[in-house]
Structure formats: C-alpha cells, structure tokens
Image 1 (spheres, helix red, strand yellow):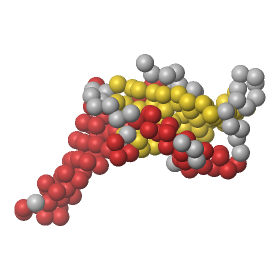
Image 2 (cartoon, helix red, strand yellow):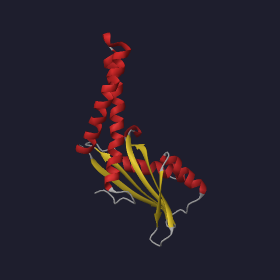
Image 3 (cartoon, helix red, strand yellow):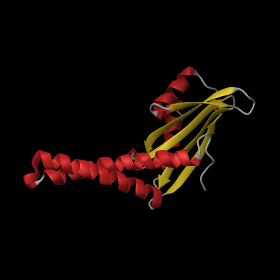
Image 4 (cartoon, one colour):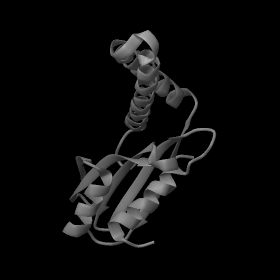
Length: 170
C-alpha cells in the first residue's frame, strides 16, 4: 500500500510519473523511428520523419502503459539530523533542480518542501518522484514510483542513494 504523500496530491504524483514515463517512451520511439526511417531510400529525411512519428507513438504508449499496467509504490524514511547549509545543498543536488514549496509545520512555523524526479530502479531508468521536508524533527522523505510486473525496488533504491549522497552513510 502506498505511503501518504507529504504535500503533493495523488493526482499530481501520478501525472508527474506518467509524464516522465511518456518522455522515456518518446525517446525510445524517436531512436527506433529514426533508424527505421533512415534505412533504405528514406535517407536523412526519412530518418527525421521516422523519429517524429516514433516519438509521438512512444510518448502515447509510455503514458498509456504507465497508467494501465503499473501500480504506484511509495516508501517513507526519516533522518533525525538537523539541517545545515551543506546538507541542504547536497539534498538539492540529489533532487536535480527541485521545485520548492512553502509549507507550514504543525506548530505553525514555515518550512520548505522540495520535490524532484530522480532516476532509480534498474540502471536508474525508472523515474522516482521524491518529496522532502526538512523541519525541526529532521528530514522526512517520501519516494513515489510506478512499478510494473517485475519490481525494480525503485523507491527503496532512491532512498538508499539519497542517504548515501546527502549524509554519506550506509
């Protein structure tokens, strides 16, 4: 059963993951279409047309497959360490250009929420959406991913990597 998100809605999470999986499908479709279109008499023009058609079909297929044939998985972890500028910079680097959200803690103090999509799973090819909030109790993180028939442990691997890259501990 998926963990409750920290601050995003389930619809926002699903849309972000399906969009990223669609982008991956488009990249694969464009590559295959360019090769197929360029073979034979098509030449460079056929390759360009094949890439465009392949990208379109790949994106649609990627989004459809993500929506219909996968289940959302999520995992939560918390680290009790207080925030420092160095640790915050490492977290931002791990999240790869995160989006910031101004949030309010239960005690009424303002806190910063961050969300980013990182590669995880097999060969770091499966997108994993990571929500993070660093408040007085420490760093709270929830990782969300779409898993298919063969589980890649995407969320677990993303959180293990976050721990290594931010805190340097195993």
